[in-house]
Image 1 (cartoon, chains in turn brown, yellow):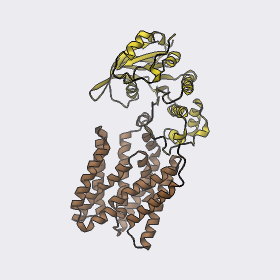
Image 2 (cartoon, one colour):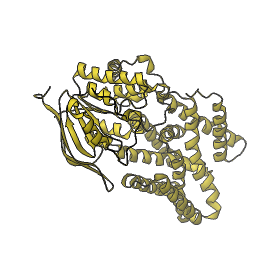
Image 3 (cartoon, one colour):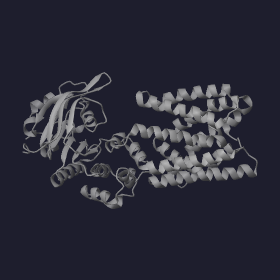
Image 4 (cartoon, helix red, strand yellow):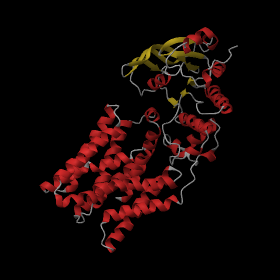
Length: 243
Length: 239
């Protein structure tokens, strides 16, 4: 899961959509709330509203010239408000900050399969994704359907967020999307370095976070993000010399 | 001079509308295979829009027909990316073509050293980056090359050098070349034909004919609202 998140977020950062992605994770909240309210699997609920949100954002982006930031901002604020209203009070903290620790076997299996899917997509499409972020026009001249690629990327992105929701919650999963690629960007000199370091940073934050949380009975989500933040600060000292 | 040769590109009644504004109006011209066409005109004349229509990323009315099996290499004016992205020159080139020998070959064509491959694109000089974009366009063996202001952001000696590279490519490989340029003296020196554009086709022909002061005066206009020059727009002396 951490590897998947590290890889996807590396591209998200280079596409300048990290803040948008942070916001996207909030779209899962109304789904989570509805699921908790009516007693079905919260991850399923979160995934449903998230994917609906992604389709909406993609459509708006493709059809209109409206500033996507503003659109995402509106969707985000409304989602958070609705989500907060309908999520049962006793569950709201867990939904926002994670910590739903019980996990069934099939959830685990689906999680692993989905992670592999995300990783495979990014590795297979990394060249097309690079080209599309360098220049949409150039990508089109080489026969890449950039709109479709963008949709796939957003969906893969949504899946990644869903993967992390259970552990980190709506607010903190957004941070796990932002911090590892920010660390990698300060250190990496090329694409492979960027992908590798981003994945490593996400794994390290997750592993150390799990360890600390288990041994000192702390909440997992905040610990993971805290560790990621410390790695980020440490990485600043090793920053490559930018020109 | 290549009057008898085959037509590489034929454009008929091309009109491009963005929003409510016609950025190109009823444009027609032809380019023969192996010919170099320079496109000149003031800022806002629709030169880049013409290219974007030609490579098929912009919808248009009218007819654009390329010779059968034409592959196009496109060198955009600028890339909308941060220069300090963690992407090396190799990453940029492999994103289009993963075969190392093609990459080596196209670097050789633009005379860029292979040891630059592992350098982040942000660490390349303006001239090197421009050549890298040309090398990028040369991957996949195009027959036609489109250059949109290939010397923007390159210093003056570098500029000459880029034009020489383009000219050499045309001579050695017989590419058909379409080139947007502000630098009229270089256009005069290297282009076979000139198209002057100001939303509509104002003139089309050989440089000697087109680049007479009265035609240029009409093209760049006395009081066009988008008359915003950078230093190359000042008319060079024409001999």
